[in-house]
Length: 435
Image 1 (spheres, rainbow, N blue to C red):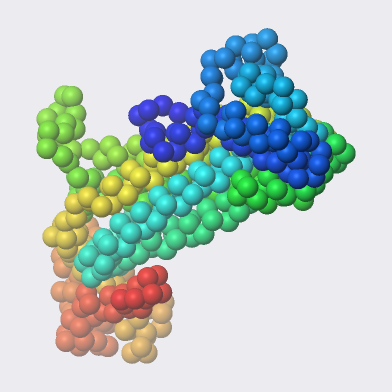
Image 2: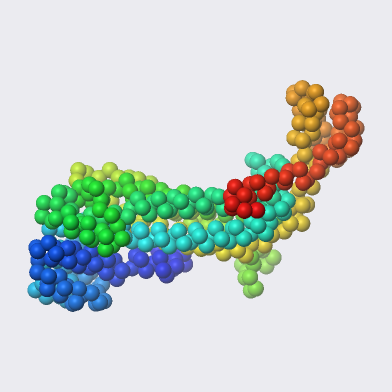
């Protein structure tokens, strides 16, 4: 994590003070359950909350202890004992380090997912607003980067809305996937701690008990979580690349907002570059780059090893913080995007009517011409226009084979732009539930 690409609310989830606070809550809730079961004195469980419930943990002190113990959880428990005193002997009863570490990680991932879901909600609202604004703004659709047939800019944004709606559903599922708790002791058999302790801690921490923890929570859950973040990142990049293309000088159908005093280039004062969406492309690469290590964490040795630990200490905060920033940035880009309908129309007209070629092809087949012949008639008139040698409609009217089947009036009707937009309302209703 670096401040340039971080937002404070997500960063706080991964702050050492937050982590140690979650560790304490896990331990203290476990003590409450142990007290209810008669394993430890109830007054001791209360004293643990009273003496450490509101303290600020000394991160430097914990680090100092860990330099000796070479064990982070033991270092924390030692520091905790400095606040609690003799009752600290009841802390961590029957538990193992992974009970604390894995449950804490999942709490952090759940909280991160909540922020990411809220981020997507904000993005969806921005996309929907602009989609309805440009619902019937015609623009050229492209396949292979080449002009194809007309669409609307609103439809482009509707596609993005549907895509990020799916992203939201995936994040909700990913959140559920990692919302499990393990308080099962060494190798996960509950030999030294009652399963009811796990149930109590899970409920208090907003999780559910892991069915079989084997000392660690299975990492297929985390792999799915980070894979979901990778998919969301790719969806961010898809929309970012669309905007980057639209901002190219030769296209200029839309561009990022350029603020007062902003500079595009240290050398060329005229430049207005798509720096935000280029940045989003880079950030998406980073988030996707963290998916493979998460997948490789699934295969741990036997009941546990810690090969996953170093990976998760890095990708947990980095992936969530980066994606949080990227979603917020994309929301800002969409909200302030400058759209140029006149340039969209100019690009629609660029190919001299070729974008209506399929309508002519289909009309000829409806008049009894074979598809092969119809294709040949249309293509032989299209290619000169492609080379800048004439107007498509004029050439079609002059073609004896075409004219034998379609009158001048019929041909002109085939060049109606509105024809391509007649089902926009249908698509919008599918996506938004309203038109």
